[in-house]
Amino acid sequence: MHDSHAASLAWLDERVKAGGDVRQLADEAVRHLRAHYPHYHWVGIYMVEGDALQLWSWDGPAATQHVTIPLDSGVCGYAASTGAVANVPDVSQDTRYLECFLGTRSELVVPIRAGERVYGEVDIDSDRLAAFDATDEAFLSAFCQRLAERAEAAGLAGHVPG
Image 1 (tube, rainbow, N blue to C red):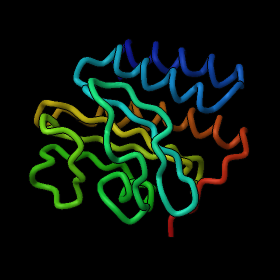
Image 2: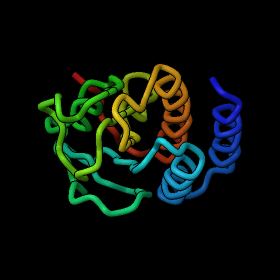
Image 3: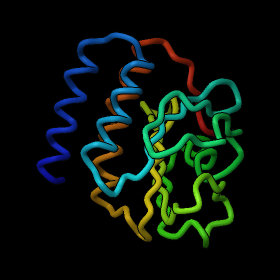
Image 4: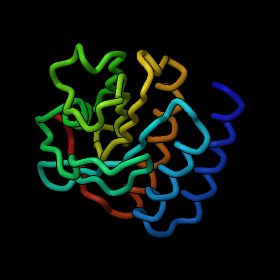
C-alpha cells in the first residue's frame, strides 16, 4: 500500500474509535476518498436495508439515479450479495453494469464486511479504463473492514450472503 493509503486508514481508525453516527462517518468517508484519490471520480456508500442497497452518502460531480439497488441487480448487487470485491475495468463489457454516468469507464465495488456479514459497500466509478488495481482493492478492503466494525458496533443488521 502507498503512504497515502496508510494515512487514510489512520484517519478512519480515529473516526471509528470515536464512535458517533454511522451516517456521518459515511459522509466523511466518501468526501475523504474522493478528495485524496484523483482517479476516484464518484464515490458512494450503499448500505444493506432489507433486500436492497440504499445510497447513504456520495461525493462526485452529480447525483446518481440509483439510490436503491436490489441485492440481485448490477455490479453493486453482485458485490453485496456475494461478499466479493467487483473490479470492472471496462463497464461497457460487463452486462451487470447499471449506467449512472456517461463518462464512467471502470467501477470498483468493495463490500463493507465483518466476517460473513455484509453491511454495505463502497462503490467507486472512474472516468478512466482499468483505473483500479490490486493496490486499490487491498486498500479499500482494509478501509471497508473498518467501516464494518463501526456498522457492527452500531447494531446495523446487514445480511449474510448465501
